[in-house]
View 1 (tube, rainbow, N blue to C red):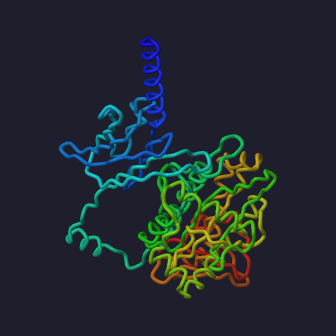
View 2: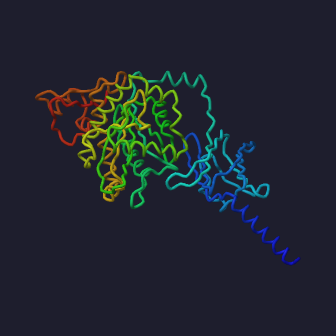
Length: 433
């Protein structure tokens, strides 16, 4: 009997230990993303867990205690040192807990939250380390103001969709939307840099996530005159194909395809950890202010010009500019469009999206549409505001170049002309002076 009792006690101990182990969460891995204003650390975990976070100084570091959790692997190596994070250390704490220490290069303001499973992602613990803002001196600000040119450049905000933890749609060959749209955005940025009177601002500069409303805020912070969001479409039917352009509709999606697409793009905020349910003052004003209708009309006009140019590069999915409730287009004062460059879910179009030549042609088409819009819509106070010429009967490119004292080469480059044939009523942007 005594021997049987010992066996029962041992079995009970094994069962208890197994149950305790089953309750423990497993930290499978970590991923780091570095943005200009913050660093994001994403821990993949087997189940939701309780955690406690606090900061230490001299040297700067963040301590994260994970309750009833174990590490699946050591978090060492160059992939765990990005942004303000110099390295990650870990150890067992209070027997059942795991303590993770983030050694930092500067002081930060931390924020942490848990994310539920979404599509290919499981449970995650996300920690954002925001850099503390450095106040600019009044003298520096005064100097900057005094050097301003009375005539400014037009600012084009280029938004490469998705990024970081959010790869966007993924093609059959594993092509990630966030990569191909960044390649197109970079090419568009370089093309705009060559245009006199225009300047490009990249909403995201590398591979990191930015919330949808934050993208709008960045564009407005740079006082953008135009907002272009670049994406690659996806659909469950791989036969779907073609490029398309969307503008905002305050009444919601214009058709079922646009509605499905808008929900797909807006869902990226759930991947990034930002809920769209809480509407701030900016979004409320967009929905309530009737003056928004003017910007929607401007966006539709811009979209028409871009879509017209895209037809020369690719078959288009829709013959007209679509309208949908994309969160990224909800700026109250900036003409904004979303360009779907092709269907990444279509094998042949996925191949095109991977091609630098196709990416370049897409960027050139977008720029031509942008130029046409500004040629027909003067923005007061800009370098291009009074440098336009409307073609009249009998004029040729050489006469126009002589009149404005510019070279034929510069005139062709400014307007992306492939021939010297001109149409009456066409508007040319004049370089120089």
